[in-house]
Image (cartoon, rainbow over all chains, first blue to last red; front, side, top):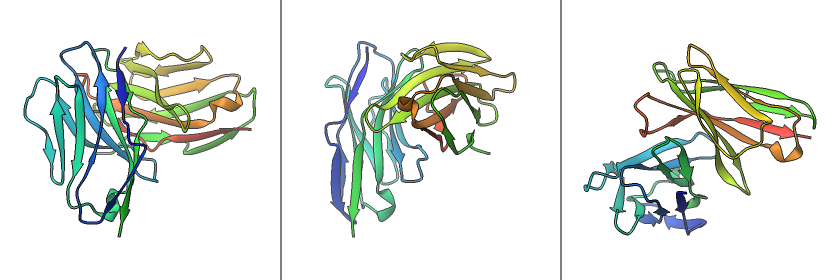
Length: 113
Length: 113
């Protein structure tokens, strides 16, 4: 069974600085999707970025980028120029061949003004 | 394009009662998944429906059931409510192609007293 591990329950970063959230996963599949979702206090789960496992190039969305290491089964999220609105719970997620999404436990990110 | 709509947003029920939650997916999306979110267990997959058929089911007791209608709207039912069923229930919709990103609703906060 696939598992997703986020080893940092909580992190803080100064506004305008860069922060990296870690995620590792375990799977025997070769084709899958990885995602980072953001859940602010409003509870709405918002897609931040996605990565197809067959693509070697790391995905980038504006200030958000990933470091995808397939062999190491690592999928970290880098947030550049952190803003107050980035404060939220961040979930790393894996979508398997059955289309079930498996989430990590989350990392709560605090932005310090 | 309207997002995923979940109703109601909040519910308070008594132990032993039953409850029905509703989810309207993004227009054109045919896959609807349900997740339970609790502080202790995190986000757990309940089930997924595609074209009115349940394709996947998580590890939840039979008290949890669902269905999908021909317009892709989905309902989730929990019978004989227990205190431990108190949670945020999230619905997500995806296009039919699968293993793509899921778009989430704002959730229904269920409190069982």
